[in-house]
Amino acid sequence: MNGWISLHRKMIESEIWEKPPLYIKVWIYLLLSAQHSDYKGLKRGQVRTSIPEIIEACKWRVGARVERPTKDQVYQVLEFLRGKAMKSERRPHEGNARATMITTTKATQAIIVTISNYADYQGQATSESNDEGNVDSSTNPPRKQRQPDNINNNVNNDNKEYIVEIVSYLNEKVGTNYSSKTKRTVELISGRLNDGRTMEDLKKVIDIKVEEWLGNDKYEKYLRPNTLFTPTNFENYLNQANRKRRNKHPPLELFAPSNEEVSILDEIYRRRNETGPTE
Image (cartoon, rainbow, N blue to C red; front, side, top):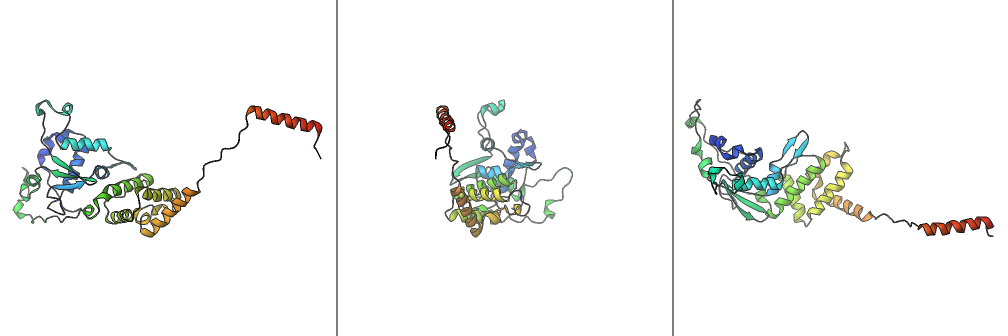
């Protein structure tokens, strides 16, 4: 993702600045992801996304551990940005309505987010100098218009949420931090889904190779999308997982005689020992 966006200094004085850090993070993520110009059905200031995609984009690290916001937390942030915060969360002077920062509409396996007043804040003429003396904007080189580079727009919309979930599943199993937006990863997972494979099939492949390779210095590095989901490897690994599942049998329930049956057997053995073995 290339280019830049404008952030107004008044954000420090706004209500979102007083919210938990996740609110700012989601807001800036939406601003960065929004189209700078009309492209493939999206208007300027719009972004096609989903709750799982926002969760993945707004994760953070605590040491080596990856933390992610919950669906409820992301939903609360979107409700706030839509101006639908609960009355208990509003200030007394806000009344029953708040200014909307975004509007949303449902799409297939996604939501379309429209940034309110996007043109007002992201126009080329919105730069402002500070009191400490910035260089005159007339001396700055003209801003290049960002070329639309949203890889996900080239992928079947139905696959987007599945790709995010599969990459998240792999990251959780292995402790990695692969992106669900990398071009090659998107192509590989979409290819397997378009081949008719299911979400369960992809998770089977992850599970079988994690069981086999995790902790192995030689092979653990291959627990990555580029290895797991290439067509030939994927078919081999999936067949391996299916064979292992078929070979698993439930444990046999061994015969356990009752106390009465044990007593009868003991009596038979006792009498046999008294009379001696038969010829």
